[in-house]
Picture 1 (cartoon, one colour):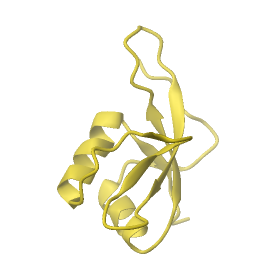
Picture 2 (cartoon, rainbow, N blue to C red):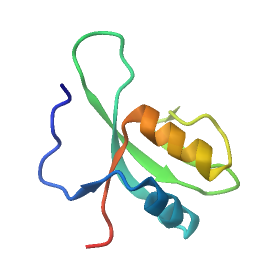
Picture 3 (cartoon, one colour):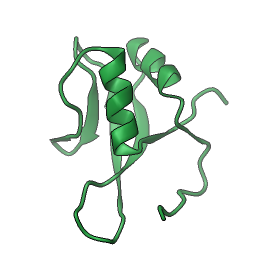
Picture 4 (spheres, helix red, strand yellow):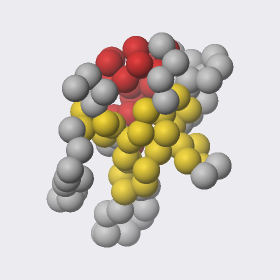
Amino acid sequence: MIPEIKGYNLSTDYEMLWNLINSGYRVLGWIVYPRYTESIIFDSVEIKKPDDYYRIGSRGIGYERHKKSKECFIEDCKDLQLKFINLKD
């Protein structure tokens, strides 16, 4: 079971996130850190699109697959179990 991140209005609306980063927003989010143990930890990430490619990462670690399409972005988000701060509110 994945622990809950509390205190933030989080979203998994990856279509909305795609639209935000394509509008120039840099969004804070969390992913389930890809570890091969039973313990689950989160990593904070910045989601952005500074050029033709989207970026999901922090501290020089990129979790994306360096693709350009919305479909690949959404697939990456789902694989990483990404949750981001909802900027609509």
